Structures are given as structure tokens and as C-alpha cells.
Image (cartoon, one colour):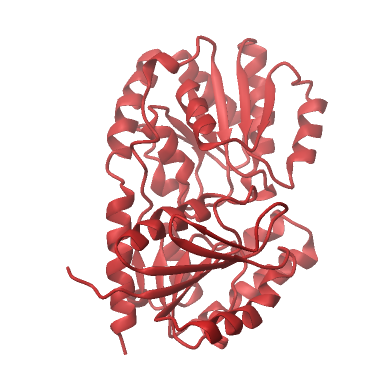
Length: 374
């Protein structure tokens, strides 16, 4: 379908070069760098990070970085007006993956919202009460502020959460994540000889990595040679290191920190199992990345992860925060070579169904529809 070339302004907390970035930033960059190649103009407004330039062009995307993360959402209305004085945009796209920016209040154009996940009441289990209440009540205002907007949800779980909040389902379109099959590839010779478990992702309280640490302690008691690589960084890292030390996991657990994409792929390819213990996700992009490298995933039975993992096919589920059950699932899969081999084949077939080119085409069509709508 032929679509007009659009001038797009996107608001997100981070860009994909920020060490604090995650799946939402990868999602944005993979889609919108392809839209640039198709002739669209894309500008990103996000917060700065140490060492990051205030202005930069990456893959054709004009990036403006201003302010620190604690105050960025308060700066956005003023920054938005400054940018709009210099150029006009056909559409404002709000990438809602943490706090909402309430862009319809000040937007001078139509607003499309890309939604990854909503915290809901689960936020009270993840952070201190004042901040949790702040996030919770901001989310409760979404139906009123965004009632006239269209939403691109990354999974059926996210769509259902929006509907539960009061968003009309007719205003929501599910557009799945993709995978770059040229980067995330299966390499059988890379699998290490010892049982290796990997966690890949940001280290945030809601990612629930401590449950994996408690589980690996039990696993190591039965399989002493097991290793856990924690790949990623975040503000929960000091607490997780303390837990690992208290559990005397010095020889079992390695914190790899922030790594390049090439290194991340290497860990996926080396691992026997990837574990995603998060309490809530929009989709769980790392699950697909692991599957594309032929690695099955054990994930918590949580919103979003239920969409990206097929239980007993591409991986296994465990009940959230149940470290004993997670340990049992890890032990079962480590000891069952034939099951891991079958899951490897299933995972490769599953991941092959997702492609960033198709995702960007669907997003392009949805953007065109929103701009043309009354």
C-alpha cells in the first residue's frame, strides 16, 4: 500500500545508545530507522545520559537529548514547543514504556501512543510507596487524557491491560515486535560444555532477578558446575550483588554488566537456557532473541511473557516469585537433553515468524491511518 511520507516526532525516555535503555528503545530504533529508509522524517526527543551528545543523528534519526531522567517528563512540554517552533510535524508519537508524558494536553498534532506495558497495582511491590503511588495515579489518568488517541500495543496482554483501564478496543492495534535474523543467529558450535544459564535485561526491581538467584542456589547444590551469567545493568544491581554474596554464589554467578550487541548474542548462543523472571513485561523481546539463537526460555507466567513464550514448546513457565519451582524447571531442562534439543528446533521456528521489516510496515500503515483520520 502506498503511503505518504510523514514528519514524525517521537518522545521516549531514552534512545537505544543509552546504557539504561531496554527492549522499548530497541523496538523504537529498529522500526523507525526503517521508516527513515522509506522516506519518512523521524525526530526523537529523549533525556541525556553521561557522555551522550545533546544532538546527534543515528541511522537517519535526529536525536535531541535534554535533561536528566528524574526531571525529563517535566521538561518535555517546553522542549516540545521549542522543537515545533523550528519545524512542523504530522504526528506526535509517545513511546509509553515508563511514566506517561500526557502529550495530548500540549500536542499541536494528532498523537499516537506506542504502549509496552502498564504497571497497575504491581508497582506497589516494586518500589517505595510514595513513588509507587505517583506512578499508579498517573496511569489511572490515561483513559481521560488519551481518550481520543490511537494506541499501538506490542502484545495482546498490553491491549487487554489498556482495555481494562478504559481505552476503547477499537482504538488499539496490536503490532508485534520483530527480530533481526542477521544478528541473532543459531551457532551450534558456540554452546559451552558446562550448564550455562543467562539472564539478559535491565536490572530493575520489577525484573525480579533475585528469584533467579535463589533458584540458582538450589540448582548449584545438585549441579555444582552450573553457571549463571547476568547480562545487563541497572539501579537494582547493588542489591542483587548483595543477595548473591549472601547466598555464597561467588563461583556460580557472574555479573557481566552492559555489553555490546555482539557480546549479548554470544551469551545467547553459549547458554543452555535463558531465564526471564520478570513480574510484568509488554512482550519480552529478549525471549525472541534467545529463541533466534536456538536457546529455550524459562519465564515467569506473567503478562507479556505469556505472549512471547509457548509453554512446553519454546520454553517453560514458572509461577512468579516461586524460586523453588523455577529451580525445579531449570533442573528438569538441564537434565533432559532431548527436550532441550526439541525446544531448540521449536524456538528457531517460532522466532523466524517475527521480522522487523514486517513490524515496520504494519507501523507505517497504522501511522498513515492515524494521520488521515478525523
